[in-house]
Length: 311
Image (tube, rainbow, N blue to C red; front, side):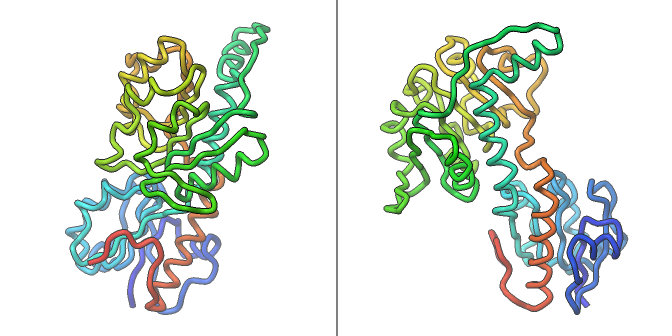
């Protein structure tokens, strides 16, 4: 009977999270932090990687001769490809983080424009210091990366009375809604007041937002990056922030973690959160549903969802 490793304490815990365990499938368990692996390493066929620690534990894949499926709990998967056995299928977690990440993206935009970070500092100091804020209402929004999370961001913007939403992806789509190709980015940036960056990190998108792109943004524009820090030229961003011309709200940075002495920490007009886009109470229930559905497909011999690499 095939064996699956799942991030639960024991069988009862797995049943509580997943519901009925599919027939014809055995389970073994490891702590959710992924620090300890079960003794059944030579038997595992389906491995749900621990969140945020997957690359370290998948390095032991050479000890897993029966491994057939690796299921990540992240949408990104590039770091796992060099570690994946040639006979195994890799599935990512596309869609799992839509809710959490889209929620944080909008929260960063609101918090940055309405000075919530400054007000939090003022509260600690006991200082009453009002400041005029900048709303996202009546502003032109550009979503760069119109996949699952980009679409989730758009849905959450519907109630905020933005002036317009323009969408960009790798390739044009006639719509509706219309999606512009990445090649039109330079034509779109001058009319953009709020940019949400949520494209995957690839060799083509690395450094996508550099000095030239930042210069094209109008005064008082806001850049929100909830994708990967390497999509933005950090030195160019710091230089622009220091002019006071634009703002940024970042859940990701380059380098990451951001060293304590990095100038981005002290640049004006920037709000930084420590890469927590997926880290919310929305993660657990959605991860459970994904794992349950994939285990059921695997046990029934059905095609898996979210396959990003097959043998």
